[in-house]
Image 1 (cartoon, one colour):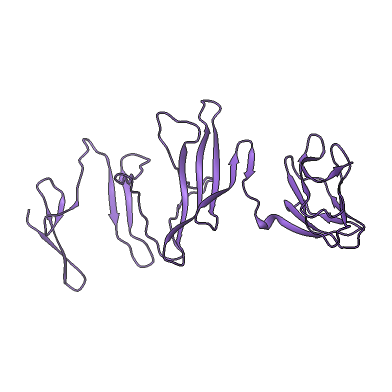
Image 2 (image 1 turned 90 degrees about the vertical axis):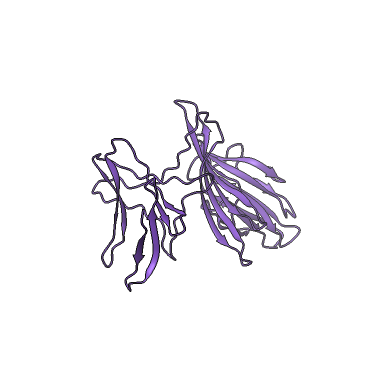
Length: 291
């Protein structure tokens, strides 16, 4: 077919297109620009609309069906790319007075689903100061158990670890949350005294500093907030080699206190709150005496 010139608002020719024998559109060099696929008895199609000031142009599904989706299918291992400006991105907009919003669905359509199948990733990418494209964080969805009627899933959070590799820091499964790495934000420093100081149950790790007066310093611990809550203690600084530290939980299973004798540097313990037993259970002990 004869070519059609496309001009801009100044009357300048910016493109020259032609329709080929199959009904597709080619450029002035005969290269393919756009192909059309015919569906027998089609009732749904696409509408492309421009926009006035303040609005956005639109690609809209129209047709006889009540609910019509739009399929974008890339080729091979490539994906669909959405180019956005700073402080903008992909918005899922739902105009509805009901209580349900939009969603992002990652669907792995497999005929042989298995445990540990990766269902999809959300990847956060940026450049380092050398201009290298870097994956700084990744959220992954997995199948934990594909058994019909007792399916289980998992979410895994990974971050760049400072050594050039992604490292798992947290996982969420049906039986709870697992912390693969304790972050500094969940740490407190306790200056222990013979009069006693209370450890926070809002932080996971308490680093204890003894005061150097050679007597026994004391730390107390209130009841946990929920079953499985973890509390770790470590003596990180010793003021005097004769110092000792006694940790006394409000409720403790198998004893009432755990004491770290003279010069307890580097010693510590880990406790877990047992809701059914109504007390802290010492599950790891490095150098402490339980009484």
